[in-house]
Length: 184
Image (cartoon, rainbow, N blue to C red; front, side, top):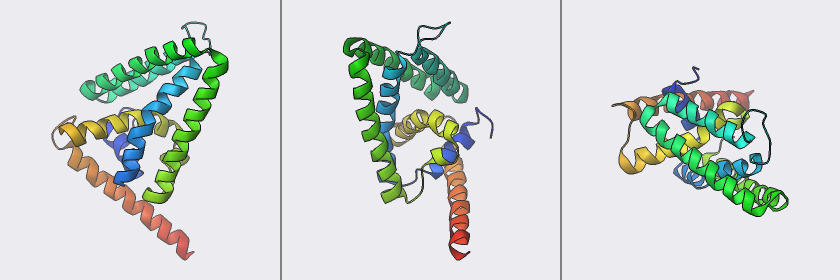
């Protein structure tokens, strides 16, 4: 899968998130998880940038814009807003309180997402199959999902139907593998 292949990345992530309740849970928790991890990374120094949160924000932003200029630019803007908010919040709280807030938010957010997968999706999260891809795509996936759902946005005409077909094909392969494992 090409790093900037929007269709394949979106189909990969979409195959793990086809249940509407699970999608809603992810829409509610993915960006706060990103925000709170930036709070913690604010305290990790880097020799060529102010901190590791800036590096992560830049990396995510480049990745998103590389996949789709319009929605990717919006995602990059959201990443930088998270960076500025997280940095301000972290500075205000200080390290000793920040890590406690981050820990609580991460535990709550991840628990909700795992429950969403277990109860509604009935499939393990994407991060168990491709950790890096799942973490990179998470914030962008929920943003693009919201843009499609609420505004009818498509990176190009026919994107949604093409990806929907790819998602269904991926789910079918997963179901066949699951059925084969049960019969073995």
